[in-house]
Structures are given as C-alpha cells and as structure tokens.
Amino acid sequence: MKAFILTIFPDLVNNFLSFSIIKRAITKNVLEIEIVNIRDFSNDKHKKVDDYIYGTKKGMLFKFEPLYKAIEYSKNKCDNPYIILPSPKGKLLNNYIINDLSKLKELIFIAPNYEGVDQRILRFINEELSIGDYIISSGELAVFVILEAVLRKLTININSFLDDSFSLFNNPFLVEYPQYTRPDKIPNPLNYIFTLNVPEVLIKGNHNQIIKNNLKNAISETIYKKPILFLNMLKYLEIKKKGNKKYYLNKFFSFFKTKELDEILYDAIFDNIIPS
Image (cartoon, rainbow, N blue to C red; front, side, top):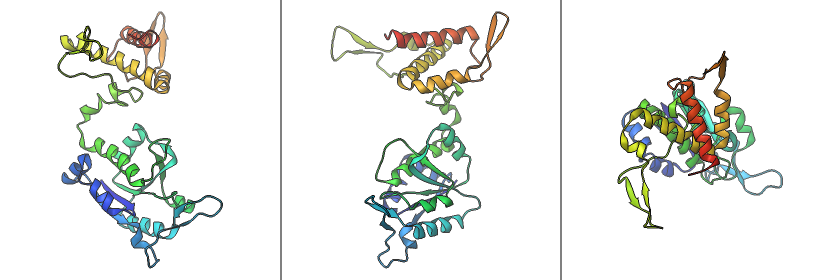
C-alpha cells in the first residue's frame, strides 16, 4: 500500500511513523508513505494556507487552492487513489470500512486543522470519515487512527482477528469476551476475606467448553456495553423453521448446534437481567 498524508505539520507526522505497527509496516515494505506539506503549495510569501470564514463563525479554514494543489500533486503519483478527509461530519469509522480500505493500494489522507477545510474541496475527495462523535484539534491524529487500523489488517496474522472485537467468531457484532492472566487467584484489595478468581472453566482446559463460555461472555458484554450492536446481531441471526425444528441460517455461528446457541443466547441475556 502507498499512502500520502497531506499536512501542515510534517515533523509531527514523521514522528508518528517511527512507532508501532506503522513502523513495522514500513520496514517490511508493506507500506510506503509520502508526507506532503500543504504549505509547499501556497502562493503566499509567508506560506499561509488558512483564511477567515465567511459569515458569523470565528476561526480559520484551510484555503481551497493550496489544498487542491497538494491533492493533485499526490494524485499524479498514483494510478487510482482513494482520498479520505477525517471529519466529525463523516461516516463513523467501523470494521466494515477498515476492511474495504485495507484492500486498496493507494490512499491519500488530508489532515485538517483549524475549523476544517473550505467546503468546495469536498468535490475532489472520495469520503469523509469520522473516528467518533467528538472534536479534536489535530487531524493528524485522526489520520493515524484510520491508517493504524488499516495496517493492522495487512500485517497481523488472519487468525488473530477471530479473537478480536468486531470479528469474533466471524461476527462483526460482538465485542471481545473478558480475559485473564496469572495468577488465577488474587486477594481482593477491598475485602481480604474474598479472592478475585479466574473462572474455573478457563483453567480446566476443556476446549469446547471454553469456546462456549467465551461466546456467552462476549454476547453478555455486548448486551451490557453496546446494546445496539447486539440488536443488530439479532437481525442477522435468521431463523428457519421446519416442523418442530429450527435452523440458524447465518454463518456466524455455523459450528454451534441450534440448541447450543439457544442456550448460550439465553444465558448471556439472563446474565444481564440478574448480574453475578
């Protein structure tokens, strides 16, 4: 993958490139990055790239001309780039979008600052993406959130995703189940009469029981922490009845028998009605 990052803070971006997955991706030739300084395309003698906003709102906007020239410069170095502008008005980033972006070969990121960009630049991009319903000052941070998530798909073993939130059990609607490490028993700092224990099923080592337990806990965590995700999952759990039998048509849980999945769903929902 080749990525261009259009920014007014090239040193900041360069520092980010020396960390974590992004650094490994560059070292392994999975990723090639070019930092494009938007100021290089300004006709102003002071390399100014922003100006006041028309209307009543205070603050500054990226000017159209230098940003457009920076985009064109980057496009001319590509065959078929996909141009992304991080924006709170954009589509909320999710695993589906990351999967789609990870299949592309050329990405151009615009890192906005100030109050954003001149609206007319939107005619020349492919997509606005939001990393959440909040505001941050640095568009560079938003770019690296998106880029890091994409690179994770390209650099990490595919089997790792099957245990992650939003891809657990090949299901995009579940968060990860609770996890534990050694020791298996820890004194409760608030009450030393009791201990904080790892669930027994995880210690016994019965693989099938562990899988069922993990699925049940993942569903329970999703219901409690992200109920909208759980409701979306139920929509995709199509059920077909044939006589007295019913079948889950969805492939997410195809390795579970219908009765097993019924019990797991019931237990997970019951855990949230009467929490332990």
